[in-house]
Amino acid sequence: MALAFEGGSSFLLRMRRRPVKSALIGFAILLLVALLSFAWTFAPIRLDVPQIDVGALPPAAPPAAMSISALPTGTYEAPAALAFRGGSWSEKRAFAATGVLVRHPKGDLLIDTGFGRNVERQLKLLPSLQQSPHHLGRPVIDQLAETHADTITAIIPTHAHWDHISGVDDLHGIPVLVSDAGQRFIDSHGEGTEVLNSFRDVSYRPYHFDGASYLGFPVSHDMYGDGSVVIVPAPGHTPDSVIVFVNLHSGKRYAFIGDLVWQMEGLTRPAEKPWMMRLLIGENRSEIRTDIARMRAATTLYPQITAVPAHDGRAFSSIAIYPASTR
Image 1 (cartoon, rainbow, N blue to C red):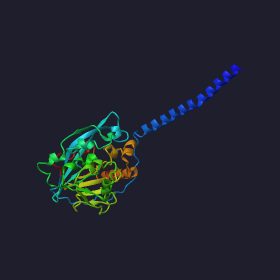
Image 2: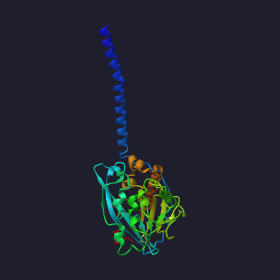
Image 3: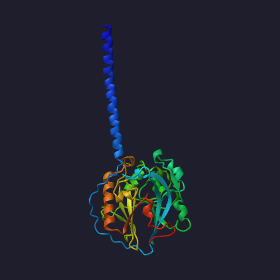
Image 4: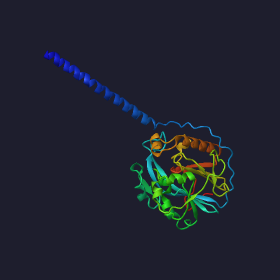
């Protein structure tokens, strides 16, 4: 009887261990599937974009005196794998933080501001994951101080994230142009607006998308009424994101597309940002996909248009660095 009982106990122990072993195997399989699925989100999958009819090239009559200049203020580093699907983990990309000065007889504009004088303090307002290693250059205010700081009549942020508006804090009194969606986003005090909302006495000047469709974008706003600077909504990266088209007297045209894509591969392949990055930002994938399609169609049909992602230094290569200018 004792032997039978001992054999029964051994059998019961083995039966109890089986569910535990099965559970561990199941968990391991689920973990492996999750890891493989996550790795797949970085795979070089070509983004399927819709066919877009962008229509005729919009007319523009920019004055001969108009010009633009790039004002680099620094960079921060990230692996190419985090910039676009298919990028290499071993390749480092220097994300540019560059402002663009638009000189126009009716008043100069600044598209984005890059890093300002107080960027180190501003970075501490962000979640730790967003505090990337960076290299500081000269802030816009210091680059412009001698000649053009007093001529800027307005700042056009492509959106309100810190690396596009840091220098606003240095440019006191210069109005920041915002659309209705832009003002709502800033007023929401949501993620991504921490730095801008930390500034005191920012003067916001509203504008409205009161113009017709423009290269496939449904509405637009013509800054000067001559077609030289036209803003369109592109609310995929953030609700307030815009694209700024700048058209020069020489026939050169630029589209400052903000963070629609982070590197040129986003348009040329095309490739979207990795799923993890899109999730952290809260991007509208459908809107991003459509706007990438619009920009690809426009630049293919009209090669005089140069698309400039805000963080790809290569895209600024045809724009003279301040104080030189491109006309």
